[in-house]
Image 1 (tube, one colour):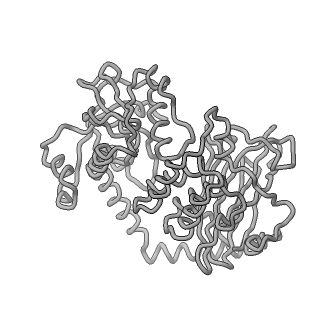
Image 2: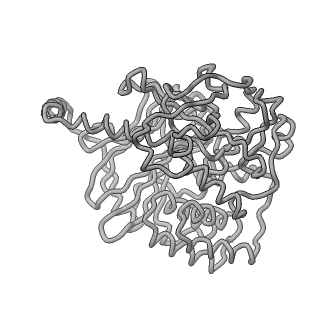
Length: 434
């Protein structure tokens, strides 16, 4: 991460001709009738597709509306930020913007501790991590956290909607430019060249001899002996390290079940996740999650609901099938072992949702059900999704603090794909047919 990533900066906006398509707050910014937007750089993107003047970065937006202090909008005092007044760090609002729209650094450099705390609060809000920083950790850093819950307070919800609308002034130009870059790739010459290269690669590739895992048989409860029943998913295993015991609360469960029927997918996911923590064996909660799994069109919501149903009613057919297999990558993993978990959920008559996860586990046992998940994956470990012909479709790489990595996909019955787990020069590939 570059040194600029901890700076607070003000930024200017371009694409004035697009003002008519933006919200009123964005028009006000374009008209020059508002203060500059202050941001904290989160990540920088090194993408060869974008020329130097159009490099894209991710930023966390700051706000001067300190009256809206809550559990996700943290107050950074002026003596920490170096700005003229206190500001709210909107930990939940991270957007992409062009580097060329940054004007200058303002204020002081934030400490690594403050920076990490802000990101962790936002990650917890978006369900990326299982535990938020404690109030005492936040206060010791000099930051201030409010007692109001952003998800429950109507004024804060309206404030968030307004801030999200205003952030379009940063993200829309990036989205427009991405669409432009994408459109110019689809020329006839490029397509013809890609087709020729693909045909040459297919001719050169050796035929596969590995056994194909037939996922349709998994749905009929037929498995190879190497694929074991997964009793505990990685996120649940980590959560059990907490000293907090969630207790069943009938009133809260009833409220969460009602929230699941609402339109907003974010709040559906929050409610479904919470039911998985407090509604063990609760019949109404189980029915609500089953209904959500069968009717949602959102993949993120689907898998949150599936995970919660696994927790409160293991073996429920609506939660699909999940199996896990130990992966041997030799000396590259030293004393660690890696497990590949595959989960299936039927979606309609012919389509199946697939969740692929890789997480570290105890290398001293071959019994996955009895193994103990470790805290982090080896950095650089790759989970790669391959087409039937061996082309890379998607991949995810483990970072220093990743507990697990995962990929989601949807496929039709009969469709084939492969999954590759790799670390340095070692790799193993599993072939699947839906």
